[in-house]
Length: 153
Image (spheres, rainbow, N blue to C red):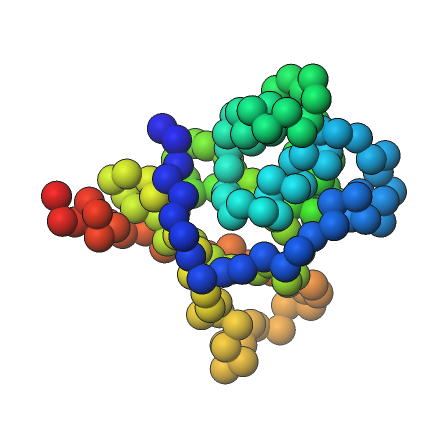
């Protein structure tokens, strides 16, 4: 089932895809530019299939097959340019990554609508992790419920 994407208050800063690729040491190609431009301009998260449809419809990627999309996504994820989102439904989704794009989602259990939450409840300084010796700790936290549209039906 395709994910419904709704407007939200989380704004992406303008991302220069070409600079991001060069800074990551990657060759600048049409498919890579198209994927990063899509993720920077339209908030996802998107499945690889949704990304493929959107970039091929826009013709920005040129001739681009689904295998190329998967390869780009794997490379981008490995370089922390994008984040993988797993909502426990067996479908992996991707969105723009980086420390400036940290946020959480609330997902409708019925229609699979995904909204971004503007604030991170875990960023509160009063939350202490046990002294484990870990460094560069990150977290993932998703919320599930029934959206207003489904609740009204």
